[in-house]
Image (cartoon, rainbow, N blue to C red; front, side, top):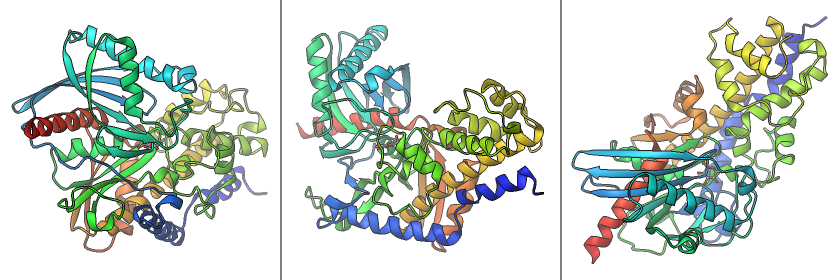
Length: 450
Ligand code: BGC
């Protein structure tokens, strides 16, 4: 009789992508990027490639106090940054966004943000000051300027009513005006990928790609203006920053050839079925659930836990993505974290063989995610065709998963055109500091212009 271990390994084969499949994915993504950039195909493109209006990098001469907001991951943060000569100091506070606000009305969301902002300003002694603010808003935005962005769709568990199709900056301005107590000038709205790129570019001038592998996934990159057919601004800029919104790759079925029953289940039970298909195979909001679904299947097949699950195991969302990182952080043959996780899930009857199998499932799911991200980054590197590019990266999956970085280095090296060099750089607090820097650059320019 075949052993449970072998059957589980065989079942997990669907989570492995062959080199041929990865090459095919790169080819499809490349075509989708071209469609997103093209005037004729943009409207029906799945990977939208939005042009951002962030064109100037910080030059180190920015000075003063700036506020930043960071909305779009699991947490919402408010920051204050003081830029001085050769140094800056930064304080920040994390606020929860309760579930009922994430899925309530847009007005309630913006009122909540404005309230947190006002409280933060009181606590930091700047309640009476008039301050500039950069707003990191990490959802697909069609930007119409540095301070105007129309929301295209919600992602990552948000679904506030009355915001899709509207200018988000106006929504926040209105909420601040409704309070009437604080004086804020919103100088810029940006995506977290652009914030990450900006804050890495401050130190490293080769940084031309910004990547997030966190609650969601997305990348931005520097593209030649000549390839950006929808750009109708100053033609003197040779390069533009493009927010790919690659999380939507696959929304037209182009990833179906590698999707599994677990991916389909994650999608149909999500609040945005059919949307953000690639993101659902990569990001922190979904990786734990993919593992859980596989474990449930194997338990029902009698291959795990003696066929005996637990209430929690059978409950959607109970297997957090941080568990994947914890389990894979155990040394080979050691199951300390794995045992803790399984105990938390009411599975303390797991045997060593069960724990080895759970770890194996985690590895398959996270490795596939790292390979998909690598396929995306290699596609961008090949498209950019520059001798050396640094990728600035942020997000909980990349930051906390013990092998994600190594898996990516290996895979990208294998997929990138020979001769092209790349570096993967962890961003220090990308999206928050990036927003303040963008606001600072915008202020510098406004002052110079006046
Ligand atoms: C959003 C992107 C964002 C990414 C990472 C996705 O769901 O659509 O705008 O950059 O998550 O936070």
